[in-house]
Image (cartoon, rainbow, N blue to C red; front, side, top):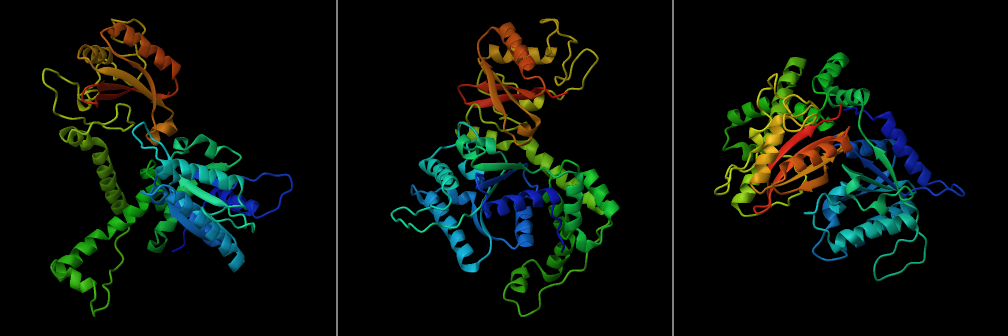
Length: 437
């Protein structure tokens, strides 16, 4: 199977690796290259393809290794893997890199509920120290005066704004935002279906049918096509004999004919996958279960949910998110997403529709706290909203005016209104009230 390497990705990675192996007088070269972007866009896989093309060996680490019950273990492991990579360069006489996948998942802080441990501090400090002194990396409790070979470090992640700011400064880390354009995506998807002889124009049409899906969506789509054949295999063998047929069997492994990879069938299965994604996004059952188990969630947790708990507190009537913003728009009612003054009888020229103003009054009257969260399109895609103004009390008109001022302050960004029950520590409302353009 011939996979596609994006020219932009190849250029960025090749330049960074090569630059770290050159002696450039008077030039300070960042040791770390941070590749960040949306989930499922093939950051790690593209790195592997570039390493293979360049003949570079990689020593791997993952986010799960950046925490331990023993303080100091993760930072020691980073030093150990770095020294291992330097030894490979010396022994094998070829370029080597240290690859840390999903760094933000192991060392980032996503909200106030994220625990910040001693190990997190030590991991940040260790990476900063290595970036500043790449040829003098010592293990705790020992010292070796022999200089090490410089080893470039490649890290991947989704949102590097969650990392410790001094770590990602330009002198230590060079940042590369990876978002494949249409040509890159068509090339990568073409590589996924290369063995299936799918014509290029059908690849283009498939990518255009699912324009907002990441690369791994199309890989999962190809895998899903085989489900029908595997289902027939299970029925033919017998579900009680599948284990003995596939494990320690004297028979040769089963072989399956190539499925039908026609474009209409791919689009049909793609729509099924997209429906599964939508169902996960809309359920939000974790809030209901956490409330039932008396596990309060942090008030400012940036989680997108459209279905809060269905169990209201006694003598209160919270407004559920799935009851808001779903009514059909009439000529005299705004949909809450556009700046409109129709029906704004309470506050003239207010960029809030009548329905949203009424919701604000009801929530404040019931003792709930209101706040806003805002973010750029990129932050919203990564679910990294920023917390803004918060207000509580019976002065609904003042709150509406304050909210309107906040909308003007964050024009050009997404803004959503959050209703919080301060006693139960849960959200009772999440509603986007402003979108860019």
